Length: 113
Image 1 (cartoon, helix red, strand yellow):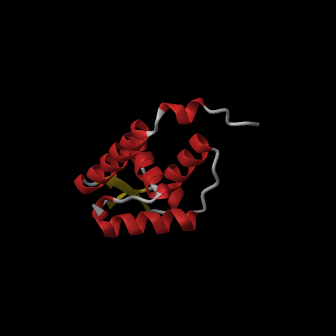
Image 2: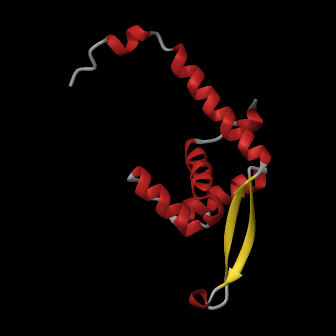
Image 3: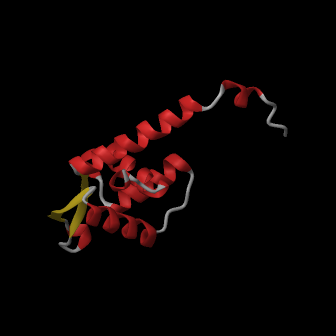
């Protein structure tokens, strides 16, 4: 089902939003991905992915309260929609199905080194 396909980075972003729960705004998402995956994330790539997933209906965003440290500007928070939850579950199920389908002999062969 094409409507449930997530790219690898989209999957990482949606899972990170789930981890952060009610504190998922762009800087927190970026920091969480970088700390958990030892992977650099540009704000441009993150914002592009967030916008794309919101357009697909996987996420919704809302403005939080403005803060003094942000000169009164609110943070934009993200949450996963029902469609986004189905897409993430589909990605998980697909990966697990593929892992289960790999013959055990594949992992018994020396990987060299």
